Length: 285
Figure 1 (tube, rainbow, N blue to C red):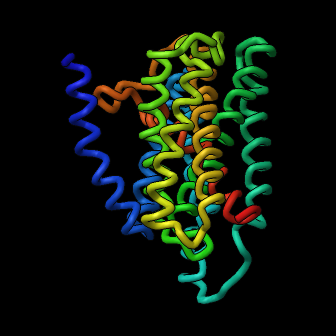
Figure 2 (cartoon, one colour; figure 1 turned 180 degrees about the vertical axis):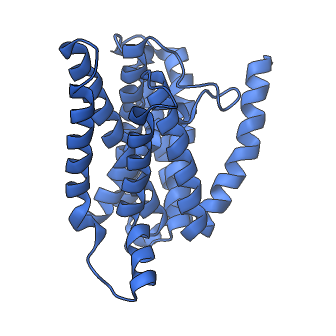
């Protein structure tokens, strides 16, 4: 067994129980864990994009993405209510306004930059992409973990993590064993259609287990459809992050997690699967 594999398994054996425990604790514990993950992911994105830590173009987007997270999870709303003793308005109603403010401020900062106009426009467009990618997806993970339609948030996250982790392992196994047809050769040459199908198969197994264990009330058909959809969104979400990394010519977002790469590398699938789960519960199930 290689040293890297031993490190990878050891880190997973320590981290997974902690993540699942926090997922079931929910509330402030879950909010704090995801806030830390978001801050680290944002740091990885900004540093890889070439923003110096001491610059305003680093701290402005970092502060905004954390603020956007607190707004969309409702924590900012709760904090304001505790100070004023009133209900006020839902933070969702002003999120678009703050996104607009950030867009205007950042666009003006880039407009007075010293690089060529084409480079400045590209950098600003990539920055907006990164802010929306992280700032709009992490809050949904929190909302899933807060419980949906009477289902426990801890159970929902266990379902999500389980099908993604098992599906990822099955995707790699089936891809190595049977993979012949490239899924996205320009973005991730090692990913295959066979691997995608294997990942869905692994997720379906978790779906069956979770149906009999925790999700009987959802119905067998809905549980299986949810598992398959989350797997597809998760695997394609992994390709989205790979597309970003390949555009920069990097393999990992960082070396922050020994044997696993960075936070962006570890939770890229989650950031696309969680919105699918949330939407499925509210629009279909």
